[in-house]
Image (cartoon, rainbow, N blue to C red; front, side, top):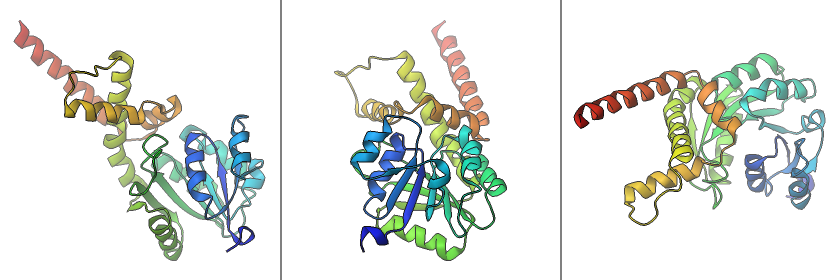
Length: 254
């Protein structure tokens, strides 16, 4: 198959995760992207990615919305009137209930919709993404097309696909991502530099976990902690248990 025969993928957002995506999609698709940040131009040029305004990116066969969750509505508004019939629209956000509702509400009925969440990022995927997980939440899409996407992700990219509803995703992500990022933020802010000599395996695994998410953007952290409808209960329980443990230790120090 020649480059001219490849289907086109349009990516809205070519930041660190968008670039990770692009590197793995380039062998399979012709890529076009939109990102207002001037520093992405060099990456796009080096990888043969055509930079276009959002209305033209929307004409691709597959459109991936890589905008942060708080900007999803803005991104959808920029493309909704320019999507062709039969286009597959995906998002890659860390929260699914809110973006899924926006996509179903605002995107035209003539496009197919699947919400996704790659369970890896630029740090955990820097040495390759084979074996990593991705969540698919079909919203409005024929089962044959869902199966085709699932097959591509498993065979071409060697990813492990988890099928879920947006609600199922956010319930689990509230613990998996909500707690991980919360603990990481606390440790990075208050306990550096981390000890490096008298360490244990459990401690080293903890720091490895911290380092995987420490460079996530403030926008991503706030999206994980504030946009997921189930995170507040999880974080409040965490803080309450931490306070109870503090009081327990205080009582035994007296």
